Length: 114
Length: 108
Image (cartoon, rainbow over all chains, first blue to last red; front, top):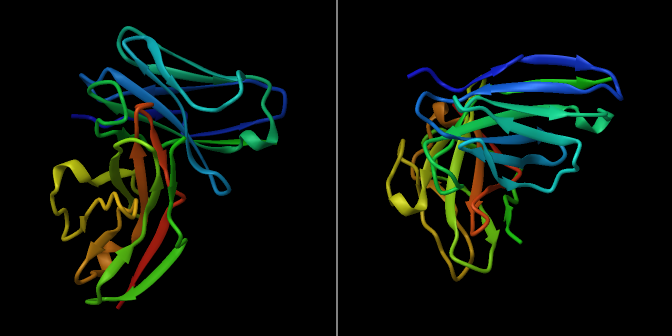
């Protein structure tokens, strides 16, 4: 099976702009989770979607949002970008909902905010 | 709240030496613990989970609820074990909380 894919792989934006990142899970996987990875804070959970519904949400401001489509593909949106949003954004898919399931990670999208 | 602590950011050992990567957690219930690994230029991937009680690539990890630890061990380190290792916990919130990671370098 093809692995988790994320597009684009690299993005450069300026403060105040918004950005949309995309994640295609492994075929048959219905859960998609998003993580932010930074040198200072490490890997932090953003949210999880399962069957087009947000199941869990981490401690991030409302500027971070997401959605999942009927084919399980997911998008993450960050509005009014701040310098601190520069990070590697990882998505992970799993067959079912919840952290108990093995998560299969994508390569990440590197976002740089200038 | 759930929290995972990996006290060592960097760890170097010689090939053939034993290696132990420390992980301590804070969680009031019964957690599910994982070790994830990221080799150079590769994706983050699951190494092992405590509920499986398995040995992967010679690594084992035992959950010690009394000490709230889940240390990763291997008796004889190999150069290909050099990677970033993350300990992770899943609790009732059903989301993964990761530690800050330990960069393991196995010297020839």
